[in-house]
Length: 295
Image (cartoon, rainbow, N blue to C red; front, side, top):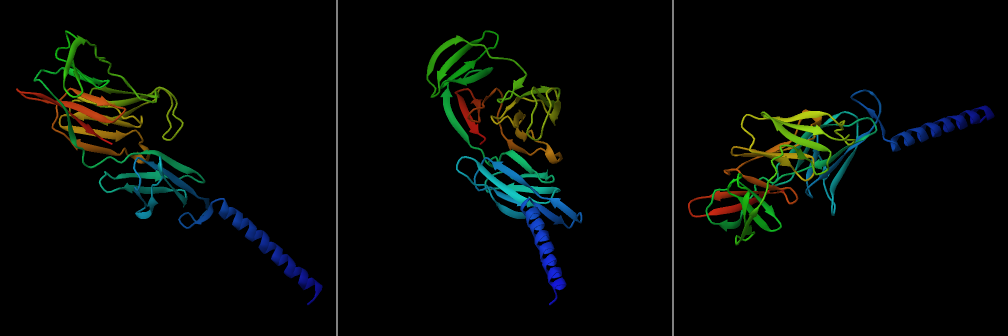
């Protein structure tokens, strides 16, 4: 073997080593050859945080695992080429969640507020009170404060188990603007539309600028109740016989919504901290306070 040939073999191995090193480095950094676009792309991922453990995740109808964790139930689906994916999340006994999710070149799309709501919500009896006309009421510090006539502003106060305590002056706020728990958004109804106005910049996706407004829903029936969920990412409202919860996130051109059909009448009290919806059923003999929990 001549010296020239040996040098040739040596440089061939050097070139192969350099090429292999470059390829390994690019693969480690997430670069892949995309057959759809026929070019090198940097892969990204989808990070999912759900409200329940064991939620099954499907990407383009392919099972990719389940959410898990002690306090936060999360899952990272990685090594995804930059494009749109059909994301489907499901757990038995809960409404499924579905959205088209865009993965960008070398980035992770974050979904921090994937909430799975139960298919069935149970009506729980709280207290039985004497029959009375109820114009409005509140649940405060383990007491039930009932206003029979808003003009007088007198509230009958009962213990949470139903024992009468006293009557007292009590004023209920009539503001139609509802500030989110995170103080960044304002919710209100105008005509048959539900709006969100952004009070501060929202940096997390879907990002918004302070002062922006968007329509969450357009309804056919009058809105009898409207408020936020405690995560500041979902809105809840009630029309005649129908309780609806919808997410703020409209990425992929869709807001996930769930509906519960309930035979209840206003007034309604919403305990945002515990996600409890309170209402009365009244006949000639009694007024019964019930609650349903939507978590």
